[in-house]
Length: 101
Image (cartoon, rainbow, N blue to C red; front, side, top):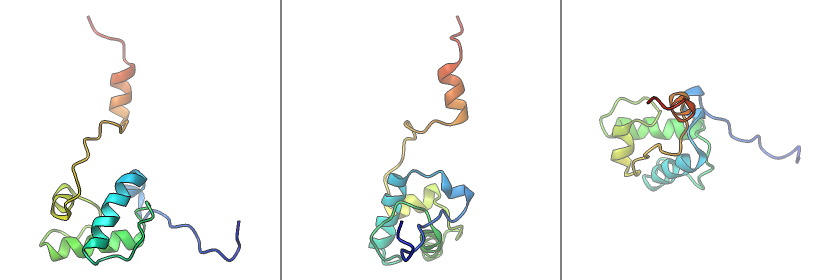
C-alpha cells in the first residue's frame, strides 16, 4: 500500500453502493460522453458520479436525484439491465424454497 496514493473512491451513499461495478462503468462512460465527468470510469458510484448524474438529470428536465433512475438511464442511452444476475432477497427465497406440488 502506497501511503502517498490517493484514497480509493467510496460509494456516494447506501442507495448506490449495491450497483455492480460493470453497471457503474456503463453509467460513468455515458456521463463522460455527455461531458459531465472526466474519465476514466472507475466502477464506483462515487460523489463525482452522483454529481454528474444530478447535473444530467437537471439538464434533461428530470428530478435531480443523483441516483440512476429508469428515465435517466434511458435518456443517457444506457442499456436496460435485466437484473437476471442480481440476487435479491426474494430471488434467493424463490430459488431455495421447496417446490409446491
